[in-house]
Amino acid sequence: MSLMCSIGKNYVGDADCPKNNCLFLDISPKYRYNVLNVNKRSINMNYLTDKRDCKYAGKCGACQTLNLTYEGELSLKMKKVISLLGRFGHVEEIIPMEKPIHYRNKVQYLLNWNGGRIRFGLYRASDGGIVSVDKCFAEDPEASAVCRTVRKLIDRHKISVYDGRRGLLRHVMARRAFGTGEILCALVTTDSPFPHAAEIAAELHEKHKNVVSVSRIINTTNTPLWMGGEETVLYGDGFITDRLAGGTFRISAKSFYQINPIQTEVLYRIAAEYAGLTGRENILDAYCGIGTVGIAAAIIGGCGSLTGFDVNRDAVEDAKRNAALNGIVNAEFVCADDRKFALKNKTHMDVVFADPPRAGCEKRFLNFVLDHKPERMVYISCNPETLARDLAYLKQGYKVEKIQPVDMFPGTTHCEVVVQLHAK
Image (cartoon, rainbow, N blue to C red; front, side, top):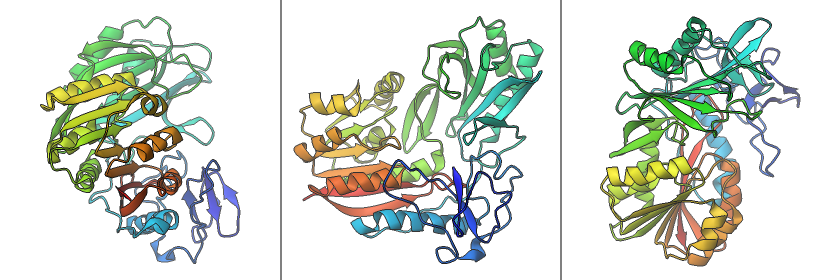
């Protein structure tokens, strides 16, 4: 992450950057599409302001636009989306968040033993450091409080902290279901013995009654926030339940779930509207996670059948249970990546929902869509750069009808976009 200035310099932080000349931008050299060069010609400088209620702005790296008013941030995002996607059609005005604070339902705090003391805070991607914070304007306060209680409990029970070579606890994750208030906590550790694990889990629930599940997840990799290892449930059933877009969803610790449930409700209703469901369509939910997109659409508009795939086995199991939980009996979810699914599946689909990771869709899957030619496709993207790449490829068989940005990540340069495509 760097700061692009009108004079062409790069900065790691914003301490030395004149605020009238530069902004934080998330720039990835991986893609041939670039975000805007930010200077006085590309944004109204009246949008610049003092940092929005965050004394850590420019230090932790999680937020990049706190030196803008929220109006200015939305303007920057619109410019970025139009510059990338405007060639495919009209871009609707971005849908803002009514109260763009405390929206993150998932929080993660890293721990490290360094110089005889425990460092506890947010991960700084620029250099792998830890920034100690006492509050974050983007995080849900209840989920953050759970992580801070864990910090106190490890002192009480004398739990060792990972120092890069040895030690136990590596990071803490808490996720709160905004619809039910339930909280899940995951303690991510090395594979060393975990003394007092059950006691810590029970005390965490005693302190925070909404904590209904506590798990231990093993991380023996060099990736600080990785959560793909073996999981052991220490308290509760290993999942929380949330209500979203008219449905009820079970979420386990390792499953993907949108971090902004308030705007996700908006996002999914737009996606369902773009799908134009009559109740008879065969739906494909690609990169389905726990099944939220396809199940929400089926609840809102009905379906003839629902098929979904995802590479995360835990998420797929959640999706199967979620379909049953919401009374969708004609649903099938399989664990497969997009390449494997495209090779094996021959079923005709009428509507495809695609909500891929930031890297976008695998070309083999896009060829699958072009070969099978479902009448409508709804592409949900958290990365306009790869979305532009994929829309350019799909252009040979599909026409873009609508483009709707949704601000899912206030305080950052990231923007979610929903696109409606019809077969030519």
